[in-house]
Length: 142
Length: 278
Image (cartoon, rainbow over all chains, first blue to last red; front, side):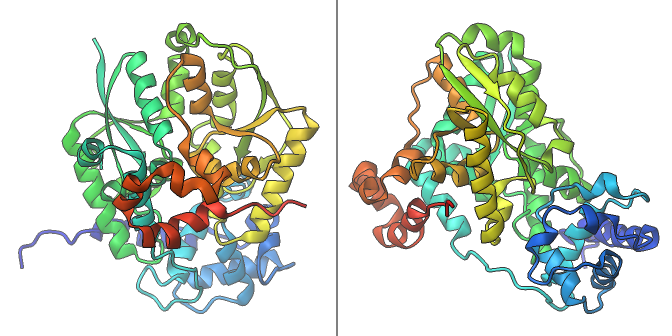
């Protein structure tokens, strides 16, 4: 053991601290869901904002989310309209981002939603770079 | 004396070499000495929500590389800029100041003005989003920048798209379709000759409207380049407008750099993609 911190350990700790802060601060009033311009695009739209937010918090706790909560998490595009709507300064944008990471299985918990993985993402970026930049630019800039 | 800055352009703007090259010329013209860095080796990790171990590694690697440059970082990409603010700097020691390019240009309007020599006769509507604007007020700053260009008139159709930029709509076809249609309707209603985007991700999505013949689309940097007389050609738009002829336009030598199989499987479908207009 070198005693050197693991790469990404501080980021993981920051995320965990944020989860605990959000779980402690959110009163599940549902205002964030009410104002969300993306909620209408959910595969499982919800008329009950309070229970939808309750489901999001369940995901953050590592529990199974409701279909309505997972549907909302799946359509979050970080509009941030929820942030000023929150009476408790919870930062619902951060809440939804962390819930998305969790539901995708990114934080080590079981995956609950699927997003189509673009396996060519980075190769496509590299391909366009090769079409648009010179060899010297590729070598020095990327 | 010019200030050395690291121009962190991101990943996906590599589709638009003209935008990167024009940014560098503009930065030099207003007194900066930019070192460009980007691509997958400088990825912020924001695309790795489903794997935070990898995202954490990418963040540490990229913050370390940017620290080693020792200069202020000027960010182009809204994803990189906001991911640095929200996550990367929380898990790593950021040792550099950071500015978003729009902020830097806005602060240098006095230096930009005399460089904008050519008239660009165009009424333009800015394609706006809600999210990133809370971090950097781009919805105010970009119109103020555009109005420096002689001949440009900024009109407002009153539509602000949800999300922090268009790329976040990749897996949401109905939302993307609504956004395309609202954008065209708003632009026509306010008499815009063209739609102008702040972000390259939005340009990549919106340029499909141009290719479909709905309305011309530009990135704001391209209008600055036109007015300054910079020589860069928007090849991506040309390829997008004529995907069947793109292979010929690109040429065999450049196609060989990416491989014909990859070009046909992964590049050409993107060029052929069109918005679903109602």
